[in-house]
Image 1 (cartoon, one colour):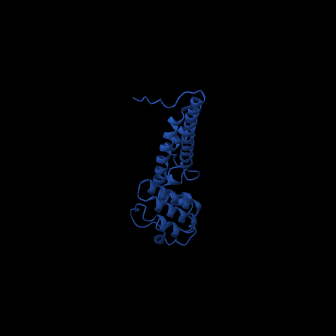
Image 2 (cartoon, one colour):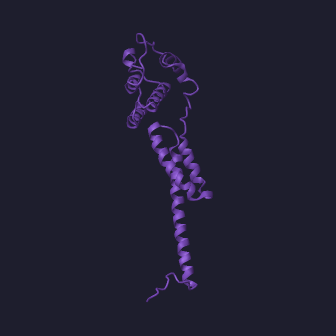
Image 3 (cartoon, one colour):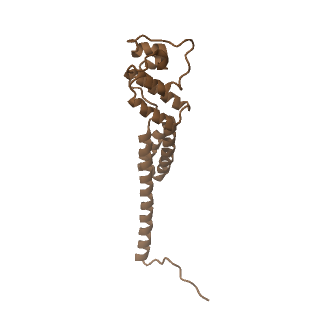
Length: 194
């Protein structure tokens, strides 16, 4: 969408057009054409964009060129169906446009499950929860998938479970030492001299 070519750069963009621009940015990030920082800064600018010209500045370098002469759209036909069908393909303005959900990261789900399963498996699932949580958050930052909250929750549960396991181990050792002293069991063997 190079609004300058169409002469409508100063016209107010619709919510559907902003959503389409968001989808272009997200696709470019998923394909590796945008780094996370660039994706984040463009997404922030997208929230404040009001005109077609502003949308064009954010997405013009990410779109494949349209073959043939630039298409022109008469005023009043920038609605989601007309604009989407001619410029970006009708599929992007289909049912996925409104309420489109990002895929949830699988490692984030696994981290949360491992974190919760510590009730039954102690640190045997706590350590995987921590590892999977860190890996999932790194992957989510790179791909833009959903599930950051799940990954964080799994990590926190993993760390809490690991800390409780260590405290429980220290308490058991302290009890054993205390019990051995109270029953007169020597903790050191007497040295045998010559």
